[in-house]
Image (cartoon, rainbow, N blue to C red; front, top):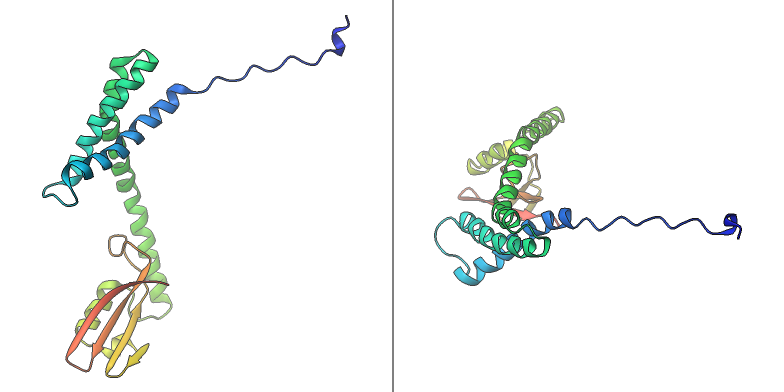
Length: 189
């Protein structure tokens, strides 16, 4: 028989990466299970540090998930220890990432304030806007952007510092006559 007529041999398929998958699944499942456990066992709003208790629940759930994974993969002690420690490791990595990104976020906020001042705007920080609103400083706020009866409104859409506003929105300063001023955060439509 002529072997040149035969199709080429099939390539051997790579086996599924069970260890890598389990290494990602155990902490993710433990953190997810901890959310449900905490809500089920504690209710909506108990006193104390909820984050630490959540990580403790995640460590317990990770211990059980790791032990189960260890039963399947024949390395019980390693997977149990990994399961218990992995939620804390994930929390540490997230904390380290946010701390490492902080200087970059601050530099970006500084750049936005400099660009705002270069545009000639009067108010380029949330603090300046709040102070002008509290003082009823209409000259600093500029012309009112809305007027409903005796109430005048001004909008501040940024720039914001990283710690100031956790959503994309605006601040609205409302001044009623000369008696009251209030600031409200609103989401952009």
